[in-house]
Length: 96
Image (cartoon, rainbow, N blue to C red; front, side, top):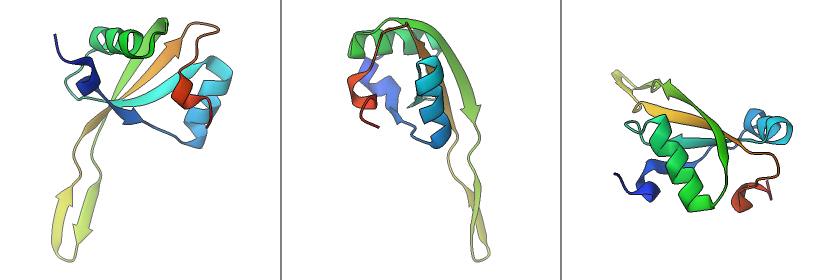
């Protein structure tokens, strides 16, 4: 079992994720690349004391970037869209 606070890297705040939160009670988070859905569910429920209905994950490819002639890529990362039970809220996401 991994430490739960190491699985969740941070929240993703965009217009699209804000709309998902209002309409479907869904929260979008950046998570560890090797985390699976079961670990993410347990981490959210344990850290934030909420009931999770579903977890959807997406592997995001890092963007290609250039600096002069040198080309590189940003690291790959994983995004999780977590559906919370009706009436459940995460305190840090409500003020946004």
